[in-house]
Length: 266
Image (cartoon, rainbow, N blue to C red; front, side, top):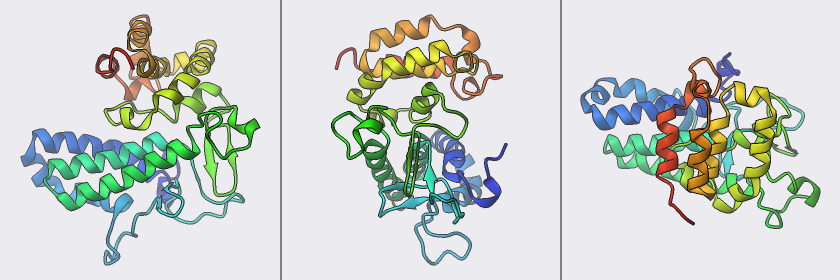
């Protein structure tokens, strides 16, 4: 599945993972980054080009600075409800990756672009997707969901593009778990959502079978580090199989690293 890559859909979601990997390689293997810098920057220019002089890529393909967050579609499509975005956490991952890349390459302009996009996306996510009850501008009935699954230009939905599952709506706003998750995922929102997220996942063979359960444990560790660790220790290792949808992108090592690096108490 390419999720509409050919018409510039979800580029910031998907290219963010490649750029994160490139940033890590650039940090530890500078010679690799020097050799492949042009190719790396093609991905950056596609999703976060700051120049209006670039003949090949538009400025900031996904970011809407007026709205304060990204849209998944990189070009106009005639959906009845306008543009939309589902996974704010994957958008954050992309801008974080660009920030890290700029730092690794000692490119202050690139780092500043990444930090600017990152700050805007986090604020947008915490305003329109992470719905701490009695603190939003949403209708009280919708606010009780605690999370937006897909935000459109004129519509908010409690669902994902791949189903109406409660665990999916929560999990898609959290993955992937990296150091920037500490900045994105507010403890008060996690405390509010974690019970319903965990119970919904536990009841769903799809959630457990596709490797989403570790996300519950990692989220739980933000609210209670010890409980998060206990949760992870009881997970079957098949949850991290590269044959599962989420396990293919999250390892046992990454899960433990994130949990163990949480403060013991908040």
